Image 1: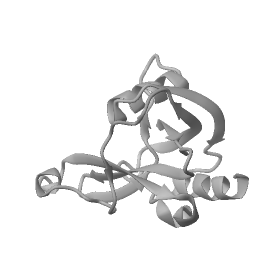
Image 2: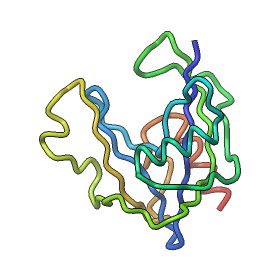
Image 3: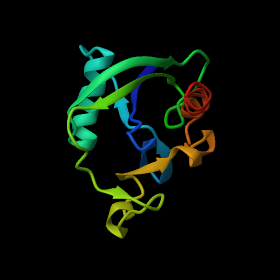
Image 4: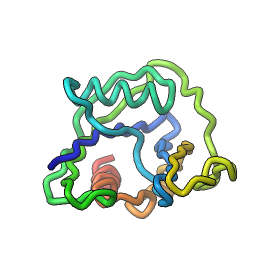
Length: 150
């Protein structure tokens, strides 16, 4: 079985990268914003929906960056193979989400349920951004590509 994920890279005018710190089923993960493709959705429509759901942000989906080209087993369900697709994303409006300064800056209520999920966002300075900044194996590949590309 396959799980298709679509993620957006937002690099602002100050050369800061937007990342999402998430608490998912007891795990702390730093990743790019985005999520799962739903039946009947195209990848760009999925990313627009995910940006609205996660950031309340209307975006234009830009150039394709990368699609997974190696086998990656799901960390949450070993029966699934993860395929991730990455695009540059351009906000059509100012980002209204509250930016955290410290990784995993959750309230106690946000992480009280070990099976719960919570999310906060933060900006990382370009010079501090690297593949070590993100948690997921495919995100690490993309982070390294971005550093080499830009």
